[in-house]
Length: 62
Image (cartoon, rainbow, N blue to C red; front, side, top):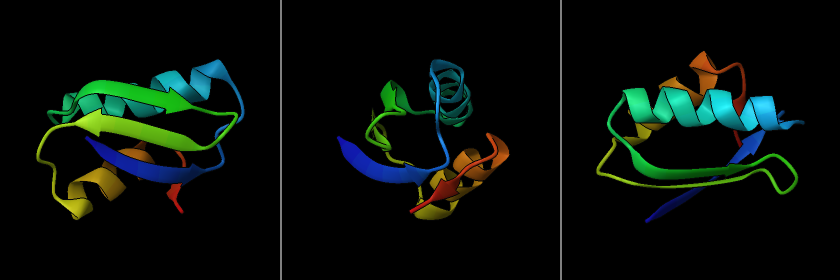
């Protein structure tokens, strides 16, 4: 399981956006928590791919 910190999420819709972008790139078991800024997921995604997904959702990897 991979854990990242994401800046800028402030509601459940934000969680959903990050989850969808990561899943579209092959991540599974994605869990995003806007209250803590923590996102966890399974899958072998390159760091560049993770950053791309988070940015596509409108946020930044912390």
